[in-house]
Length: 402
Image (cartoon, rainbow, N blue to C red; front, side, top):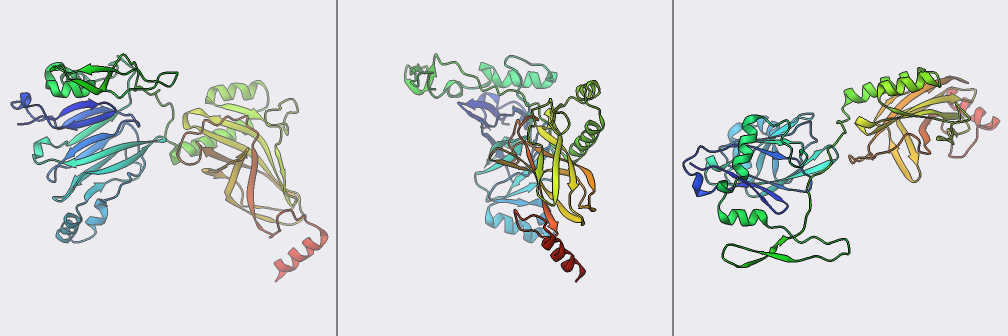
């Protein structure tokens, strides 16, 4: 029987063809790998084997051409669906939103295809390729956060032994060992590269193997948690608590207890100049930013805003359009708790939060930026820059009476 080997080829993780030295051992169909968005992962698959890829936390929807949703196949006749998938040479993928894993199974005509998986602001790239022997295919790949260099903390005993077996000189043949040692030359600080070539056992020079260059593939551990609906709802509760706290020691102690950072605007405290332009006056209404709150574990910034109707008629808003501007950047709210209507001269509180850079990438935005808050007014319809004059009020009232 065969056993798959796990070999690092430069900047590529390959989980693939075994050494003949392992021909008498049981196949290792369950493997472990470290997460690294800079390193694509090659996974051997077979039509008779379902391959499950597991992450430490929930992932985004996998994206790739040539992958068929298993649920869509289940809604059609089984034989016809499988025949259709085989003709197209595609893979069947099973994934549900919020899961920390997905399962892939190739058809008889499947070829090498890649799949991109969003994970905490990064993209993990997989290449699936078919193999002839089912025992050479992977049944389960367990991905883990990258550990600090030289650290085995948190590994189970069996996993530690498996890693040692994979990385030991007896676990790979000489050719594989030379490939694992190969590394592309990297520029030095001056922009040049020192090409100290490495020779193989036959004395031949390998121009892709460079010695004397030290580098690390270790990424700093991510301290962010996925901004799930439940966590964002919890952040809204924190915003309400921050709003209720009195300025001074009470707010300071609360922010420490909640592990958030709070910036207070000049609308609340003239001595606080971190939020120097808190009022957005649109003529009909004002948006007054009171406090901005950064939640570091979600990479999110929340806002406590007063919505003040300065007119003598009811106003209707679209809370989904709440956004915060900083410089030329515009960030749309990801979670909102705000009134959709204000009575004449009424003032109510609104809470909303933005997450990351707004496009799935980390934003690292601080609470004390020069934020400008806006929201769309639905009724009455007033042209941009138009003030609510007596004529405008009369026209609005006449339109409302019709």
